[in-house]
Image (cartoon, rainbow, N blue to C red; front, side, top):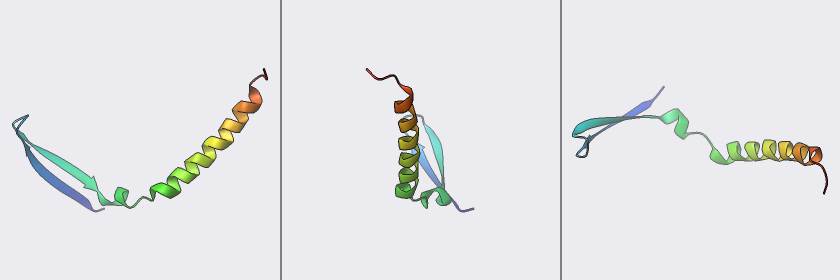
Length: 55
């Protein structure tokens, strides 16, 4: 697992801050993930609309 470590000196906190970035998470395709989530949300919304009483 590739991890990128960035160290930065913070003048505000007077200490060194270490950030660890996982390169595997940067490779996730946001569009593919969001399309699938949108599809699931639309299916669940259709079920809710059928459940609600009509006015």
